[in-house]
Length: 573
Image: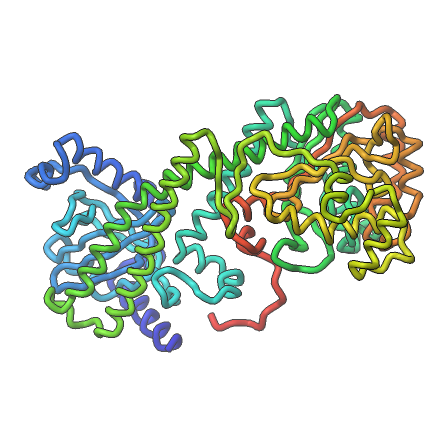
């Protein structure tokens, strides 16, 4: 079937060239977003008293529209063709009439266009009898001929792995996927605005590092031919950013592509985006406030955007409803070329899309109520998470006592609890056992929390880069932010004593894997600390997980455009 479709489209490609039409088009700079065309027309209608009154205005006095996008629906009715064109902002109907074009362009419209082709149209905008805002084309240009068919279903790919492997098709046919990645970009821009307001500077640090550090992970190793030396893909930019604090860059941050040579699951990817920032003269309390500002503002903007997008979808719901009507009545309108089975299949897909959009519009009403009440509430799976600051601050010790029933400092009790939980503890240091009991007992409870939760004051032995509490050297001034059971952020009051830092680098903790430890000696970093690094707070946030939360997807692969996958066998073109 695919081969037949491709042969048919190749023949159309040849016919286009015979007609002198470039199948791959030229630059087209006059198009405007489809959403802007629809909005301008609806504003024009309101100025004339509404849609009913606007019907009486002569077509030559209607506003014009100039759009470019991909064909996603075509309905042929003799000398009239209706189609839907989609761009990044939305989709709208266009109408192509035989008497509006010369024979060459009409042959293009009638016989040579396929779903997936990219076209440009310009003409007067009018609302049809069925209520669709439509560009009645006076100009039609082919900008790119599609030689492969679009996915079978109107609403996009249904095979999850193919959505990841062929993301271009997912984006092409699934508006939700496109909006999700637009939201990812918006989250990063929101972070940048908050940081700019606070005087932070964005920097770049090496991806290839001669010594990996800043995180407990197994690195990817490569060989630098020009230097004849092994290098590592970074697992964190931390030690380089701290060098910048030494140099006088008092507030720095980076969105760092980072790598960990570890397993893959729904919340872990070997390649990921790690945001890190460092603030001279701050501490982990300052980082808590910054975290609330960064994620809280991004969540607020996400909620506002979701409400606005869903409200804008109402006209699209009407368009889909009208398209469904037209398909069901295709025979009475003279469309005998399309088989009835194909028409019914399109109708079913359109109705599914309409139901999805209607649910989003209903959800938008709940979002609007929460925003009006001063709360930022977004769904994540079965949870409704309130991102309105301030967020709860809980100590590691209190949570362990509450959920495991043991005192963090009572090693005998902690080890007994570990054995009860089936955790091997005999060959591990106390701090490692404590942390494994914490992961087994506390983290499941945090997964049910309806707000983000700061977990603070970790066992110092687990945190070699962290300053100890002045009144209790067994506790590190560190927090992790948990949302829906996922660790989203990690922050410290930074250690700036070079002697203590060097000792921590050298001290291996029993139970830590040799290649999954933060205790990797970096002599130049110690040298930098000896020049003096100001007291500082440091923060790391997993951007992919933040996007998961704010766009309500359960797998990190849905938050990354091109996730890491097992190599696939070559596919047909």
